[in-house]
Amino acid sequence: MHPGKVKRQPANVVLADFSREGEWPFLKALESGSGSEWIVRTKVTNRLHGGAVKNMLRMCWYFLFPLAIVFRRKRYGKIVGWQQFYGLNFAFWCRLFHLKKVNDLTVMTFIYKKRNGLAGSLYHKYMKYIVTSRYIDRFICFSKKECEYYASDFGVDADRFCFVPLGVAPVKDMDVADDGFLFATGRSNRNYDFLVDALSGTSIPVKIACDSYVGQHIPDNIEVLRNCYDDDTFRLMAKCHCVLIPLEHLNMSSGHLVALQAMSLGKPVICTDADGIRDYVEAGKTGFLVPNKREAWLSALEYLKDRNFYNKMSDVARKAYDTRFSETVMYGRISELING
Image (cartoon, rainbow, N blue to C red; front, side, top):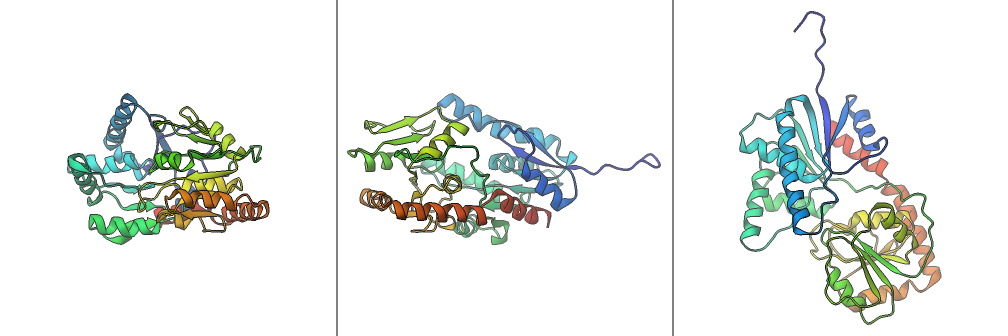
């Protein structure tokens, strides 16, 4: 090295799948905790859902974008896979090519769901090949039960799976009202077929915002919105009576993002009683946790007809969000784990 020349420390990087505007508080928290530079590398894939072509393109980018990062890995110190498959496939390529480990790698929002048949067997082998590699230092999970389940299922040390309660940005600048309709949104692990069956034959208006749901025999009281994103989704959430989160697999962490967004607006939630959601929704206080049985969901809706009960649950939900589930608290916890 040239005399007097200071060797520049490698930057740390977050791999994201969405476009950002303005400053990202997550970066600020990471920089504050590490005292070093953090940057973002982005390949937008979060809109590539619905239809075979979009799904195939999304899967291709899940592999190609991390491969590009692998070629530049020595430029970076710590890597955070905000999109979990960006982090997972970074580790996949490193193991496949038998590369020297040079990065501290964190995989965010780790979710694994077993699949059936030959495709499911191959998917499990692919995931185990990655998870058991030495290239991933920690997995961030948003459910305590998931941490235990993944460690047991993949046969790795439990301390590699770290539970951090999810925190979200508040839904701001929305006109909050109660226009009487029920609202459901989200893709991961949703059981909208059950929801449609449960609420068919009623006069209750329901709106489902999901670009990947293609239901059969949708009744007149239910509307499926396949082109509803971002602020349009939040406007509907702000105007609804309550938010519905029907889940399919009970041991899979999902639904908590929508639940917390609803809580930030003071909207009660009715959700399938599942392992992961219990870390966020307090049954009977901030929402309802019920089995996927029609009578249970209709009974929860009956309780919400009592305006005093409804208002109390709304207030408690909003306070729970403010004190426990803000993104500021979450970012601080993640930064502490990553930066030691």
